[in-house]
View (cartoon, helix red, strand yellow):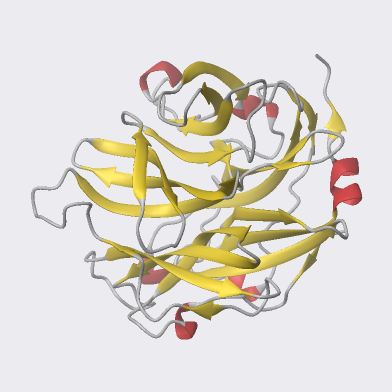
Length: 325
């Protein structure tokens, strides 16, 4: 059903500048080639106990989506202003969507007052313009690749600590916009309690792709183990298993779930998925539907490397069991 490449498509050793953890990339087909923007956390080693780390976003390109060529320098480093008093401290977890020939990137960013999500646009992966930022706390935003009913749509994952009883019960929401700057009409799409393999949080993963049956959409889901610890670097106490899931959204109403896979479609099994900075973490960040019907799902593994799995779109659609209205 789903076939994994047996080794990562990108890892720290492939980068010519300082790199330690290369993962959670956004991928799109843009101007005749595959483009990847990847997260690179610098300052982490398997035996390190240091908490000092910084994050940069790098760019790689490919002609086939498998073999990648990394630019010689990182694209986005540090803060917007570069000054010590900047509100934004770092960018991470990019997600790419091409709309009408322009590439847009959703991202998370740490600020001095919480975690925010943002959207920027770029045409050359050199310069960029930030279009919008959320208030804290929100992240895991992904854009749909076209307007629906005259509006742009995104999926997002707020952090409702107070209203969820101080539990890590985070859900998937949608918002709409007339111009990619101002967002509203926010609706609940999928609650954690609806995902059989999650006992903690869920959230969007890769940007949705359009099929004849609906918007095929990956999610991430967290199962928190109470009876065991998972592999992690530097003696971390780590018990969260991240799983890749799948849902189908209505073509005309993307806030409506019409199909849901009752089991994970990708889970940690290979050595580089089970072992790393945080083992047993699967996080899809890019999905491409080829003309042949093949679907490429790119995912971060163990918060350490970037990987690829493939399947036929018809097989993935069959996994999404119909949901009652």
